[in-house]
Picture 1 (tube, rainbow, N blue to C red):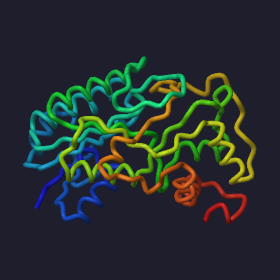
Picture 2 (tube, rainbow, N blue to C red):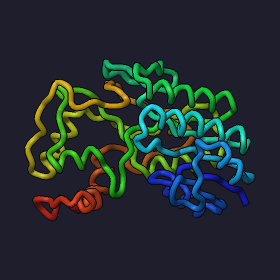
Picture 3 (cartoon, rainbow, N blue to C red):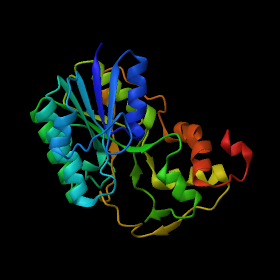
Amino acid sequence: MARALIAGYGYVGAATAARLRASGWEVEGWARSGGDRPVDISDRGAVAAAASEFDVVIHCASSGGGGLEGYRSVYLEGARNLLEVLRPKRFLFTSSTSVYAQKDGSWVDEESAAESAHETGRILREAEELVRQNGGTVLRLAGIYGPGRSALLRKFLQGEAKIDGDGGRFLNHAHRDDIAAGLVLLASNSPNESIYNVCDNEPLTQLATYEWLAEKFQLPLPERAETAGNRKRGMSNKRVSNRRLRALGWSPAFPNLETGMNAVIPSVVERSGMESRDPADLR
């Protein structure tokens, strides 16, 4: 039986583990708290103490809002510890489409420049290169949402959302279950390339997104602002292509934000403590 380690047994990791187990894998989940074993992957000694033999290691841990030091310890040093101590046959690392810094709304793919102007993005790129140099595979994830979780929807419902300028900036999203499906696909098959974007098929502008939500909930559009907050991964404007992953046979169950959001609205609304204006909105 093939064995997999999920390093970062959180929102994405637990969903991925469930799919792997359903496919017959033996899965062990590590997290700083929770999971099958409490392991801090930034601590080389802790990784060595928990070490075992795994066919696949999936690094999908989060920095947990720890700032630059959190990014460096979890993403870069965490990846280094897992690679050098465990030496798995296959290694998957979840990065972010925020490494694409393009600002002109153009389409980007895995061959496009990924030159972040922000330190967090540079740390992710350093970790990506470490993984690639060790034969691993990088998955660049778009904005994650899914059951019980959507920062965009929560902020909209709570009146905290702002539209940046004219609202023409494109947003790129990926449903949690589509991310998990991509991870399982790449864990189960030898990847043809070392980098894959994971996102839905239809990037949508910020204005179009909020117009849809405003109509859906019969609420006003958010106010406009020249700068809508201090985004830790930087402000960019690009449309991310998932063509490379789709070429392997992956197809998102939630190909656009409208489809995915309709599926998650009830759980996000409930978790946010908000009430819909109309029960039909929650179907």
